Image (cartoon, rainbow, N blue to C red):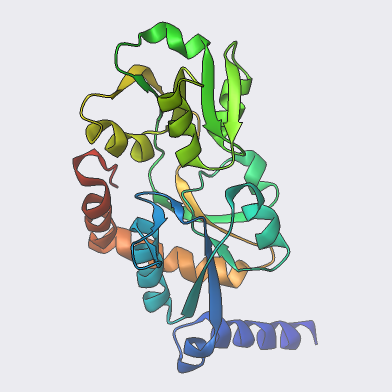
Length: 246
């Protein structure tokens, strides 16, 4: 009897998340922040855009899923996944043991990105022991809290940069992939300070621990994109020469 019931369960999972026609009717809600370019942001048309929007749409196409996008503030993005407000997190989230204890992750779709310090021009390495801005709930905030520097937290990543420009913080600490474009386009106003710091794993899609079937089909689609080179092409499109590829 258990074998028979298990077979039915597998059949249902295939219908919901497999490559058949029925899976096209399954709606999967993709949760993102919409405020972390080039990973994700809101464009001038008021739409979710960026590397992860394009990646997510392609993963859904390959998995034959009907995916809808929603935004959520970063500091509550995991609790709202767990509570069922959406089905995935696609928001530049590094895979860590602490997060993996609460939710599950697909394989990484972006390699581990080093964290960097950025300050105003003229600053030197000593600013890293001063007041450091970081986004609340990030691996960078946790890292700064473990050092002798003073942590200044903000709900959004753009506020961390604004704090440096206003002189409220000596430097900002965040992913290189996020900060590099701002440094490049600042006209010399912003500079990197000190060495890069490796503190997190790669970026993966977060899912509820109970959604193993959804994780499996997304893992398969990510693996396909790695194999055929389309994931690397997408990374180069959005991150240019600074993008980390597989």
